[in-house]
Every structure is written in structure tokens, then in C-alpha cells.
Length: 82
Image 1 (tube, helix red, strand yellow):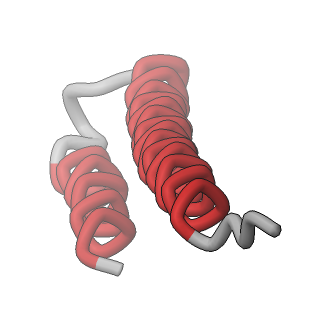
Image 2 (tube, rainbow, N blue to C red):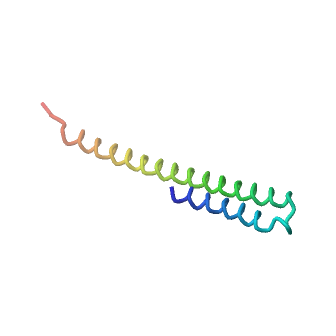
Image 3 (cartoon, rainbow, N blue to C red):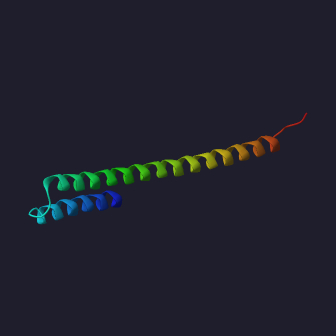
């Protein structure tokens, strides 16, 4: 949520500065700056998504390893010998 808010502010201020400087900045440069701001925000969002996925995957992997380790200990202690 906070990352999206920062991205929205960056795009808003890029557009605001483009409108404020419309006498001195060409239309092509305005389009380039806004599209560049959008591209940066999209890339940051993708990086954040991949990092959170990697974090969740590593936590899941550690959980599976700990469950596998605890199950092997339980099976070893619950052997009934006749």
C-alpha cells in the first residue's frame, strides 16, 4: 500500500511539474518523463513482488524442513517393538 502511494505521488508530481513548465518543456519531453516515471514504478513494484515471493518461498521451505525433521523424530520415538 505504501509503495503504491509513493509511486502515485511520483507520477503525480511528474505530471504537475510538466504542467507547470509547459511553456519551456516540449510535449515529447513531458510524455517521456511521465512514461519514464510509470516505468520506474512498475519495475519497483515487480521487484517488490518478487522479493516477497522469494521470502514466502524460503519461509515455506524452512517450515517444510522443520516439519520433516520433527516427523522423523516422532516416528523414531514411537516404534513399538514386540
